[in-house]
Image (cartoon, rainbow, N blue to C red; front, side, top):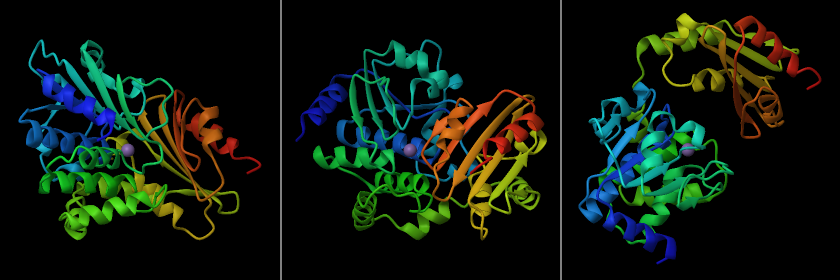
Length: 316
Ligand SMILES: [Mn+2]
């Protein structure tokens, strides 16, 4: 067994209270990796870890196993304190949100992540940017530690992969297929798990459709720009990923921009590209991300942000 896994086991055995969190505004990988780890600890060490989150959990994740065990940080009992804190899929310190004070007051922090981060929070780090989902890193530790797993754990590890790869579209290497194959052998039913995620509110789907219908097409149809005003933004649930992927399916569209008016003069910008890197554009607005999938939050009016972002595509 690898040395880091031995330390992981020691720390779990010696911990009096354990908490687990992903990034603020959880996605499938953050939530399912946290819940999977909670169940792994319960099953193998007989300890109940608390999964804590800040922000919104999308409705589509309502039916994932053990969802009801995740606690909004403001609903924790007063004076809650954890000597061992585990971060999964958290990104960077600034994405911790309201759980940061509990992380800071923990005696020891373990992290599992696949995001680029040059300021690691953990004392013991299981980080690997080559993994498509954080749950794969947890699965490696499960195998190395020869931990027992059950159906919930198998389902959660698989759901994290399904969501973070967008149903196996965003794949960094063949590892993710090997892990998925192994999880299917362990009992993951892909059809059931994908269906379990089809659980959005009708108002969300209607807003997503409207935003797609009203999208603008610029640069001879190579750039699609969709805009969500604040009224519609409140009906959106999650990040509007489907808007980006629908527009990206259109023949000739190379770049897709989604502008979300999160509140007055604060616009979330998501940018996608088929193959030409656009991360520099997101960075020029103080954001970042991957080469072909990046974003930023810009403090300005919707109209100004709209014009500035379109301008940034000049010459592309
Ligand atoms: Mn992830």
